[in-house]
Image: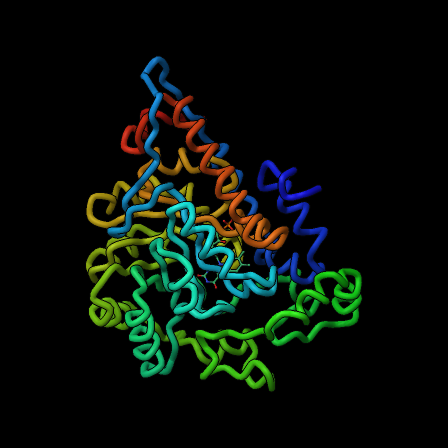
Length: 381
Ligand SMILES: Cc1cc2nc3c(=O)[nH]c(=O)nc-3n(C[C@H](O)[C@H](O)[C@H](O)COP(=O)(O)O)c2cc1C
């Protein structure tokens, strides 16, 4: 199967599975514990149905949205994800270029493998910097100043990862950064020699956002130790309020799920919240963002931009989220499998397929703009 033969999420996932060593595929594909939240993220969209209107004159369709002051040509963006050059040597460069080409936003992770400055030069679309809060306040200030100088439009603080999730697939293969594979994991790498050749013939693996602070080479601080030793589990609302003031621009919290927290985010001056359970990779058994969306939109939707991510694989999933009041949605694995399958060409094809689906679905719904989507378009079973 080639990338041109991929028509949906599942096709790309299959192609990525063929190309990637199993430990890496499982790192992307997996969730926490029993992966119940991971599964619910997508199946939650099936608890309701779209109710179309017809004969509305839908020749021209405008799917653009404005979220946190950023105009996006499409109502979905590439959510920040870690370690992208491990999935394909083009990594974040491919995602930045594809997002820029399609006029949408993308995020660079604190655990990104290309610097936020380089990504900024590649795309002229809005860029998010995904931040983890460190014990070292000086380091936090330095990173924010760096993001500001680079011209990052949106600061996104991830708040659902105060400790790492229990990813048992990674434990079984020994997946960690730096690599400490067990025998099974090593054999699985040996079964994908093309990936290995590609990996060693391109620039060496780096985490440029953390280069000066985390020693990847000597293994002094692995990623799991980064979470347990460098991130601050004492992080509270006062710390975040200070960060919001210091940033002085578009600031959103990723991983808000309760109404109380959504209200707090408004109080401290955030301009956006992303309802997210980190793609089911953190607290298994927690609610899906889509299930929780209406409650949060009703509580704060008139005061802050409510965004969601998790489980989105189809244009109709995007339309359902927008109908409930989300301003935009983020996708993760939806672009990561295409990246792993074919680099930039894969990401571009995936974004294009989603764009085409949304346009077609809006026509079929009788909508010419996103503002025409509302609760009236939706019935829960
Ligand atoms: C492989 C992988 C790595 C991720 N890395 C990060 C990260 O570094 N920071 C972050 O805030 N979220 C991270 N996420 C979560 C995504 O930003 C997003 O919330 C999630 O993937 C959405 O779910 P979906 O994959 O079902 O679309 C990661 C997700 C995946 C699958």
